[in-house]
Image (cartoon, rainbow, N blue to C red; front, side, top):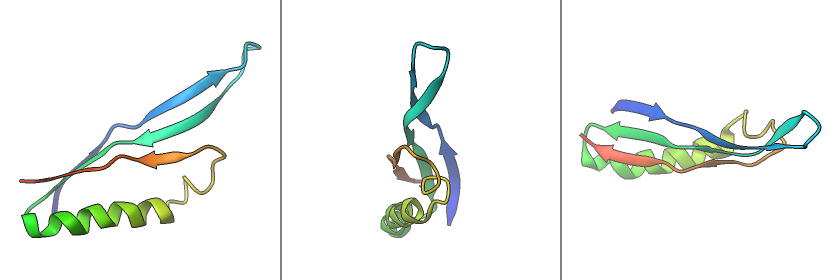
Length: 73
């Protein structure tokens, strides 16, 4: 069971010098806490699957990376 999920995304935005800008990359930093140590590996694997299936990441023209942290608590 997941007992906590927090994400603090960051992104790199490039300005073009003409008043416009665009994202070059976004990094998601999900921090997931699971109830039992036996669930930690499954939680890590779920992040890889979620990245592959992410409709937002698949819909934008810049990379979206995941740097997940899984804790037990």
